[in-house]
Length: 175
Image 1 (spheres, one colour):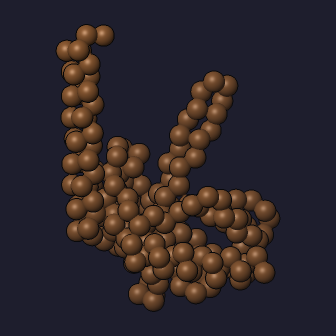
Image 2 (cartoon, helix red, strand yellow; image 1 turned 90 degrees about the horizontal axis):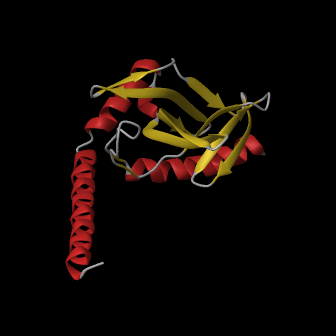
Image 3 (cartoon, one colour; image 1 turned 90 degrees about the vertical axis):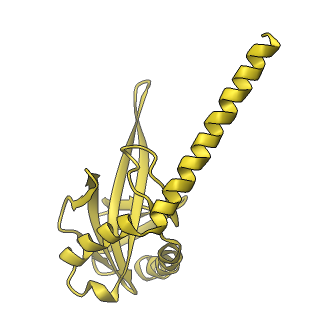
């Protein structure tokens, strides 16, 4: 490779990194406005009576599934609300700037859960029959990457509250 080509490649990489960092900063700023989190909150408020006594947050989960040589990524998005001993989960989708729900949600308690299994950043929730109901994580920072990761949500307080809640909930459910 000639020196000119090396310089061009390095310059291209530098520009790409700067563009990425600027985009991330803009998306974080959008997340701090609370617009997307407010849409998530509205979903919970419509579906959960007494939602004012809950902490509301956005949760997400991504999993890979391989078939032969092909790996497919699946993305899941949830509006959640939690308070001691109770977790409300609603699968949501984001389209055209609006958040909608895919079910009326599920209220999870010690009485209807069989087990909770932490796995990495996430936690899987299993019913009494041993079937996985949900798996997700609540991240403090979520920035829009593409159509599969569409939310700009900054929720540091909610993420910390969820970690505290989850530790207690795991001990209640798992014994």
